[in-house]
View 1: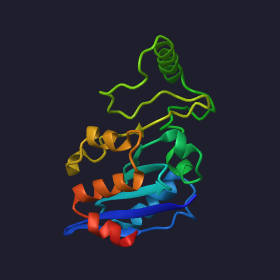
View 2: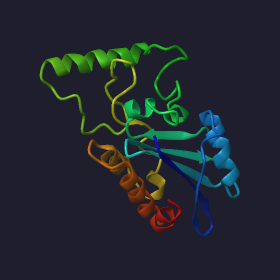
View 3: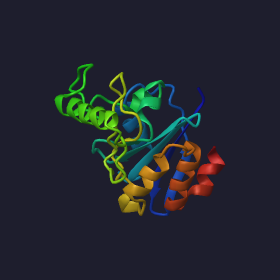
Length: 190
């Protein structure tokens, strides 16, 4: 599957955008290190990843803090080598085992009960990125920190709307870049 990845490094003058290669990146920690190398004075760096219009991810790295991650469709990302970079055990709510945690299992069980009763599995007010898990334990739909761009004027609801079924991941990343004021630069490196 084809992918696109870009680093957006915050500078005094706005955003410095560059395409990046993820072939040598094996973990989220490696991705965060790559982002930190692009940072100016420990400013924010965003990593945009898009896989063949199937899913997108935004990873935010602020200095030495742990990276914050949002994935538009965790189930689709789980079928990708690049998705494995962002779908950490912590993000999936696992404690290092291959099974769901008790809280996640309870949420899945409740969602299954609602679905069998004819209720919708979607919660329109959900802004934390949680979604019902599929049979393999990977949540279908958005997952992660939907509020990671709020301080740049891009709200959690807007990000969740871009992750909604039917949205094109490449268009979603362009919309985010436009809101940050670097849409034209992102398109130039595509």
